[in-house]
Length: 148
Image (cartoon, one colour):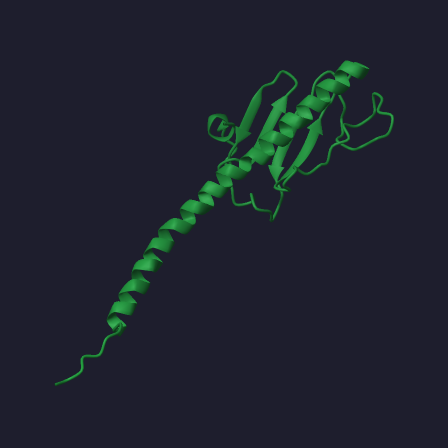
């Protein structure tokens, strides 16, 4: 009587490897898109924090500031005392304030950072009037897709 050998054949092993690679090729890009969308909240949170700091400064000194720098004894030329990079480090933050009566806060991805590949939302802005705007890589307005 012959003893039957048990085990996995090479064809079965190759089939499993092919199935796993197909599943991975579908899952990895989908996960990356999810991460890009989720990390956009870093920009919106940072902008809302800056907006709050601007309004607080306006209540105290009667003007908006032009910098996020931490300047002691903030006066009309003072700063917000906030970092120029978002909390998680995905976005650079700037303040535009040409006449001290208004402001535009902007967040753009850090070059070479985790959000640099996000072409769907490359710039976020908020003004003193609370107007939110987001633009994609072709400079089209995509606010509804980016601010959620």
